[in-house]
Each structure stands twice: as C-alpha cells, then as structure tokens.
Length: 247
Image 1: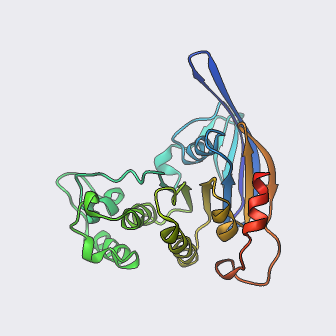
Image 2 (image 1 turned 30 degrees about the vertical axis):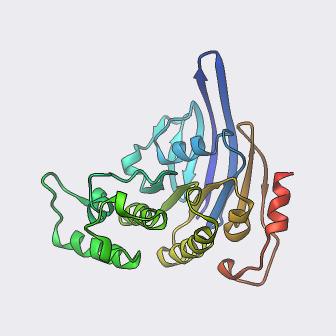
C-alpha cells in the first residue's frame, strides 16, 4: 500500500518557531522515520493520525486521501482507520488489561461489548499472550507487557495502517531484540503496513524497508536498505550500514 506525505506545519513556543516541511512516499510495508529527538518525527506521525492538522499539504494512504489543504479535505482522526501506539503507551491506569485493549470497541457506559466484540477481545488477548493478565492493571505489568497491551489496543479495530512512536525506547536491550522480532511477526500476521519512529540504528537494521532520515524538520534523504535474499525478519545484521545513517 502506497503512503504519501507532503506537508508543512509551523509551531511557536514564545519567540521560537519550529518549521516542519517533509515530503516522502513509499509503497513498502515497513517505513522507519529516523533521526534525533526534536526534528519533527512525532509531529509527522500526529498529522498522519489526524491528531494535528498541517498548515498545508497532502496525506494519502492507499486509495484514501486523509488530508488535502488545496481540496479542503480533512478526514477526522476517528474515521482514518489508523492504529497509534504512543511512546509511553498511554494506557488508562484505572482500567484492566482487557478494558484497555477493548476501549475502542466499547459502546456506552457501564462497560458493554456485544458478543462478537467479546470474541474479538478474547482473540486479541490470546494473540498477544495477555489472557492470564486480563484483569491486571497497567501498574502491575512489565514494560514488554504494557507494550503488548498498547499494540493489542491499536490493532483490535483492524486498522489499515499502524503508527508506532519510539515503541522500544523504554525497554532494555535484550527485550528490544525480542520485541523487534515480535513486531515483525505481528505485521505479517495482520498484513498491515507500519510507520515507526526511532533514533536507534539497530531498529533500522532490523525493521526498515524504507528509511526516511530527518534533520531539522526536513527530510534529508530517503533510503532503501541493501538488497538481500532473506525475509525481513531473517535478514543478516545491517548494523554497520544503519549506523552510517547517523553520519
């Protein structure tokens, strides 16, 4: 599915102004936005999700135009069919794992799910190995478990695109390796394209099919990883190549 982003956005903080002017397109399933903090990666993700409106430009996902300033198109966030996992996971601390995962499915209050939605919830909990934790609160979960809850919540509505903002930043090195592999398996299972933000070359080496490199609110280059004869999840280490992106 082709993803096209060509947007401009200005933000003020006192007398300081940040200008985001980015343009990229990819028909690959795994796009990585790469660069240091503060260069506009998260802001780009927010515009794709519909949480922030660009000043001008265009965003197209597959056959759908989500935003086009010239044609006055702005699809509301709730109608974009985009899953979003925030950097801190943004779980509701007072809700159980099952309630967090099913939050986008619930109808009214008190909590109610029709039978079909309950079956979908049970399936999601099983896929993400969360069934034994369904009545636990987020404070009782490990970092990897909280991440799986956030991913399950984002995917339970079967979105057409998954957005991940620094999903491994709070995990230790060993858990990062495991979760990268889990993420690749999930992408293949759900057959969903992913846009992921990172400043870690190891994430790029393990995951990227298209790399969009950011500098100072702009895209400095768009790169495809070296060709190889392996499926993405089995590719040899590309750490040296990815590390050169920082140069």
